[in-house]
Length: 121
Image (cartoon, rainbow, N blue to C red):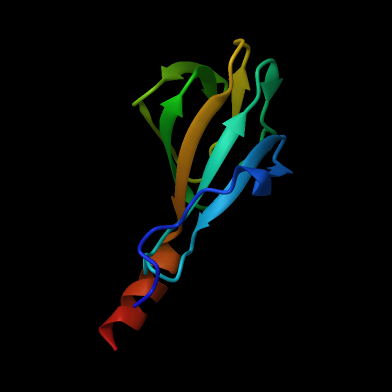
């Protein structure tokens, strides 16, 4: 039986996209058509502005920040969800005084189709 609990090791956060993150999915215990990462945007910093071909969902955990999508600012805090459309230019601006934590899930139509194809066999 695979592990059903994955303990967070905060010392393994990596600095990428100008924020600190750890990929938590894929994980052997969870077969899913998406990937995921815990992200921390430090006070007074911004994540790197970027876009990609995947759809993305941010689940805000703690703190407050502005999510900027195609130039429009959206202030979010604990419990808010943010949908990032495919190809949308986006970044996170944490002008506050505390860390902003969020979990991101991302997937493409191709990754979902591949997952469903493998699950059917």
